[in-house]
Length: 284
Image 1 (cartoon, rainbow, N blue to C red):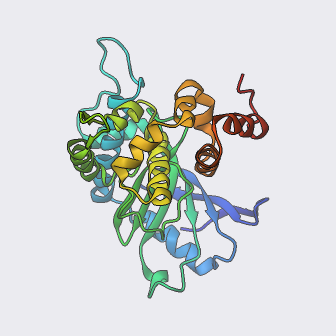
Image 2 (image 1 turned 45 degrees about the horizontal axis):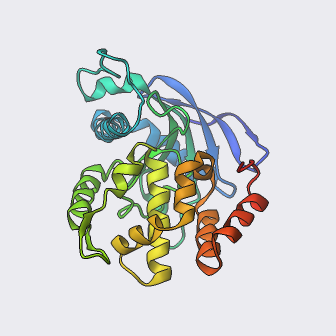
């Protein structure tokens, strides 16, 4: 199987189309600059090897993605009608499409990398249309499945519990443990149980992931535990603004870090000035 209709696109990538036998259709192929024709051909050969066993695992993780989306968003609210019904795992494929294969240069730091079975597939699913879908397969195992993040197939996703539905069951266990352990002594001697993730679950996996990164940033900066960082963040004016102005959720985590720092190091007034000067949208 070869690459057809290939050309150099505006990003310096070799782009073309190839046949995806499992789905009996052509998909787009994007080869990173520097990928040899021999390695590209090898990866296209891996595409031919996709079988029912691999696709069943992909469908299992897609089911996790679907369940989490239905549990924590308004997607699929159809009254009495079941959202995205399916008879078995393979039946989920009618809601999923893989449209592109991205081929990366195998890293020299990984022994025998050029001989390892890898696939970096992107596409979409009907319950997560805006963000897209990405599936990473390495050495025959699915290492990531979730919303599109322009991720490398060579990355380490063994600790990426939020947004990686390969680790969804582990994530649910960790979340339960987190909630059970988030009982913190407050100044007035009362006990309170944080429902931090409950509040953000409905915003979707990408926002939950960004919020977690922000809490980790606060914890590292202040030298406190994750639970204490949740409390510290909730007590800021910036956190109040995040709840009142949804456009703030579209900003990247570096911007959030800066906002936290500005308020922490100065005051809420300086934070407001920073927001007005640096947000392209009108805060008011």
